[in-house]
Image (cartoon, rainbow over the protein chains, first blue to last red):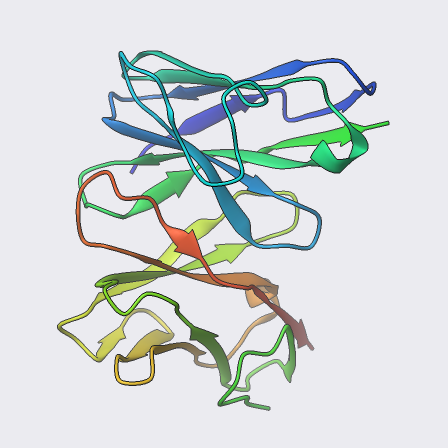
Length: 114
Length: 113
């Protein structure tokens, strides 16, 4: 397993601003993923954070809106840019450890955009 | 009370009853499946997994059943307790390193004493 810490845990933001969410893992992991969970909904994959290269985005998500950094094997950031109320969601960092496909999740960052 | 068959967004049971939560997955090529439990204000927690070469796997008070013919997954919780109240998600993936999970719709389980 892995211990995953996300900051901030929650924030209230103004429309048009940007917010960066940090994800720190207590061990080196190859694969890190960012998910979004809109209110009352399931989890949707935003992108795979690749160490040393650009993130791989899923359909419907673009780098300009959700830039991602992955400077090393224990840390990643997700920025939600030019926020609108529709971006109000929980953003979750997850990592794959030794078992392919088995993901562990952080507690999430709950964003409310006014 | 129990629920079998189609996915239900909510399930209410009495403490001590057995619960069955259903999920239909989308990709016939998926070969690894996981059930997650998400309590309010927390991230999803791993409960149990199953690979496509199996049709049943048991854990502590939980059993997962896989029917590949109809692409159906179920989670059975024995002697349901109030602490089991949460949203339950099934997830599917290819059994390859670096392949992200695709989550199904959740089921909110409410357990009353």
